[in-house]
Image 1 (cartoon, one colour):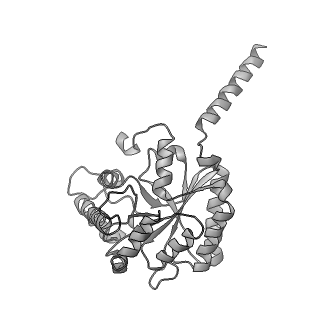
Image 2: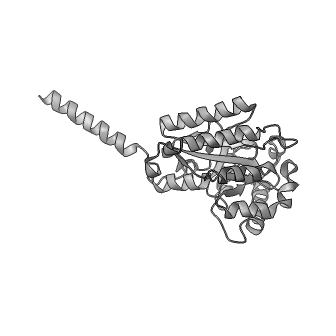
Image 3: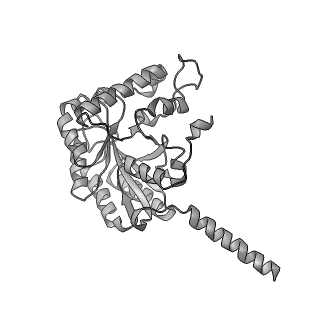
Length: 282
């Protein structure tokens, strides 16, 4: 009898722990999805239109002089409208230094460059009203050089986070695109995004697999796009493929909480036990 009681007690504890740790998405959705786009290619303005037509809001990370993106400044008023329509317009650094150049920069260089982009966004996109938003590491690189204390050294992962945290409330890198909600509070500057590129079938199937995986596991999927075939972008997909992915989200809307990165991140942080950043422990 005692053994049976012990078995029931163990089962009750297991069920309690499972229910206590299962993350609750809004409206009992099974998973979350954020669509992000990097660099500010002209066709990303069309991406915003495609999403708006389906009641979806995404995240667009802009850079002004990096990657030949002077076109971002030329379309500043259009990006301001994208922001006012409810999309997140975030920081992708001012200069978008590639890994080779970034490796030569100090923490002060990186902080100044990110700060310059913050100033540009504040003036040209946010209408001089501070806005909660996130950052996307250029080339997905959230770790640069050593983590020495010496101010002349490059910024390591935690130093990068510390210099970003006064300006943005989270940051997206590149990886599997799968994010466990219970980890976000401690790693909100290491949000994983999965790159979606290639021919139409490759791009759609890659996105669908990541979305379906998130629904199965209850995780947050963050997809990363570039242009819709703009000249010079080696990571583009076609308009047809992007539209098909957006339509798939609509098809699975009953299962999905679809929102910009900053919105999903804030929902997770507000609904999980408070936790210090993993970097605070180092």
